[in-house]
Image (tube, rainbow, N blue to C red; front, top):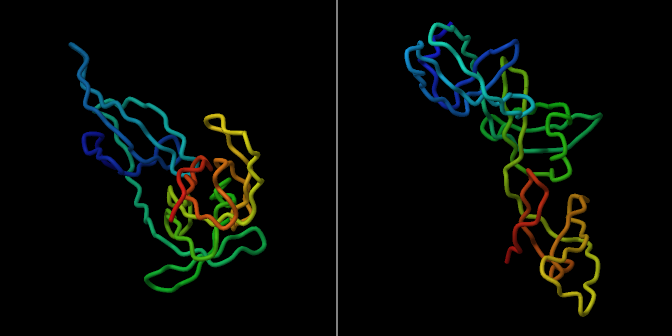
Length: 186
């Protein structure tokens, strides 16, 4: 058990039966009341962020999490197989840990995987990844209004919205959190 006065950003704690990561904290002393700590806690599995206030007398259980960057190899039977880039050890995680980001997963991608006691509890792709356009709708001449987008298919097979000037063979950068086009890459 640890005291809430020992909070630091990135610290993992057990709270209400789940693992949370302290995203922010602030010492708070409301007038003649006892001191408190306001926090923003990020749920380790879902990524949901909540506000919670702790009293200085509260005790919390600190949890040790291991974060590894692992290279994606392949998928089979609803599992995604990864290789530790340092030890070359292979492991798998359920595909649902990545959620909608699996559409941006291609062989060789690095993925940030968080482990608790040897079990993967969350996975996340890098925020920005480059992809090649393998199919794009043709641009219609005269269709030049600001912000007009068209459909395109990237090399993972995912469909994305891109500006009219993007054509087959172009490389683009996508934000994997939102699935939105960011820029063309030379």
